Length: 538
Image 1 (tube, helix red, strand yellow):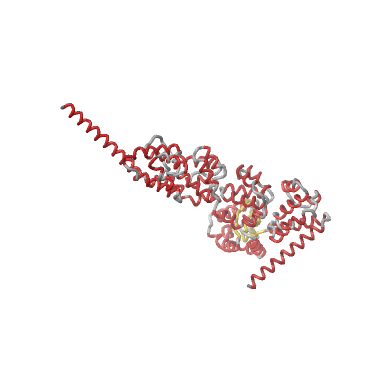
Image 2: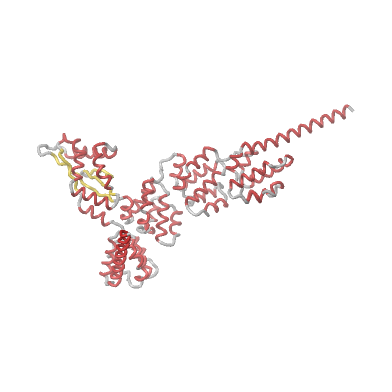
């Protein structure tokens, strides 16, 4: 009997221990959800894949439709977590086992490890989450998901094929970037390192700099992003992308992905627009490479539109007649150094000079050796005209004498004289973009002129086309396409190219075509004047 009583007592103790362990485990799981609710809400992904697997968990099966009908992923997560907290005590163990298994088979080990750690996968850290969230606006400006980035993230298993399709389905750059960031934030913490690695491998080190502050490659400055924006319409109608792409690739400005995307667009205008969109998302170094490419590939007129006109002036120091300068070179070197330091350090001696130049849209961009050469940058053609007035009126001489004369007065320097050849101003004027009237005349006349113009070597010899542009014309499949290509190219050249084409048509006895273009342009100009007058009257 004592044995039986002892046995019953032991059995009672065993049951008590089992009950305590069961209650302890139930409380632990509920506590984990409550203690980590915000983290779970952020890193859990109630995807169709996960919800599909959870249908095999009896208690959750009936609640899955309610979770799926929620509008946002956060709402779905909230509904799913709330359902888990409502599981009856006797079902807690089986439901949680099923939930953890579903998480692991859905590649969400970092979430499953919150409940039962089986690997080193953990949710995105607060530090990395803050980096991504804090820099979202900047990332939307510069990150390019489709420049090989998504493909590499997919191959590394950082994102799934479903993630990839969802991100690519977004309409614009900003939406794609936001969706990518939202996706990465729900992944494990090592996804952040994989993102950094992939950004470096896809030529987006300037984006890594945005996130970490590390590296030498900076994103494009806001000043030049704004220039690309304000000058967009003029630049789009003035560049011929096909002639630029090879050089952009060789300089490392464009990748093969950039090339494919630009070349896949149907029209020249669409290609130009995408090219500018891509450049705006790149680094300052890439933008400098773009400007250099434009310069090398006979797009100097576009460089001038984006960067302003650059006018070089030679500075001569006039020395007091009673003063003999023994070492002219040493004097020039001293003046050069003084000027360079004054402009570089924004010293007070150049304040009045800047006070006159800046409101007129003119700035000193460089002071160079070669005697002494000062390069002025003019913001636009109004600024170029202002510089011309300041030069012809000798105001520039006076301003430079006032700024730098006192510093070399002991060397006998009385005044400074600037010399700017007329050719400098004329060169800038000749690079003025095609006027809207001339551009429209060439574009709109293409169909009518297609079978009326003969593109011969004689005609092309009279036009200032680069080898690449000339080949683009001659390699067109039909004679009509040659004409259309030629007119499209000329419409994107400096405005002087319009009259050059008319003269070339006249010289090759194609007077009907020349007359048609002249008449069309005159009509365009008259319409513009009438429209302007109408607005003034109103």
